[in-house]
Length: 306
Image (cartoon, rainbow, N blue to C red):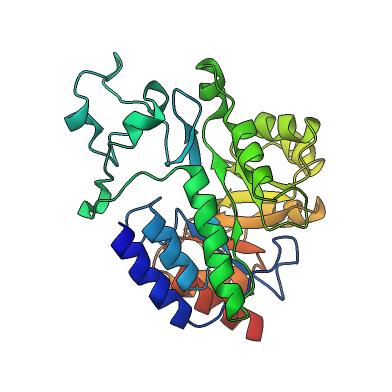
């Protein structure tokens, strides 16, 4: 993994320089490319190599999902279960729960360090959230030497209710880790996104000043939209709620979100340059999540030039 990351560092310094505006700067002049789990269309998701490649491709923000171990260490992983992307079943065959699944929260951080990412058959270590943030610090130091604007971070604490049931608070762990790296206010290049509106509200009530984005996969009620507009910056929104997948027509949630002042960040785009360009140019979204940040970068730059 170190070798792969070193190579990507070298490539990244030669890459075309991107820009990283704050996520609140607006959907028209500075559309954002949000690297979904890193450059996950090319390399295993949530690996340091995938994050580095996404940066080299010009992503504005890097997205790590975050879960906690039994000893409260935040790690980068898409779900609270772990067998899909690691060799845990091979290394710890007797540690599954009664449902047959393996959960990060049942393992210590030392045990997690023995695992290997097996997704896409490339391998690599499971990074902690702290290692991710240190990587971002390093990437921004490299980019700063060439005059490149810093890349931001948009972590998603996964399933806060599940973590609370198991004695942990994942959203507060994310906030504390970000604060330790200087991400404190709405002008900093950090956004916390989550599907749990209550968890975001708890963060705001506890004094978090970072921008918050509520993720929605299904049509939300107008009451919840109004509630979110009271303390959230925007919506990380299923793209099917913006555009009818059958007719290609825009849907009412697009206009209603704007009425409430909520920025839109639809997910998730694959190798779809036309669709990304359309969402940027025709719908004026503030940014979008993509597994292919290089393609997203070109689409965003094209929308800007228009």
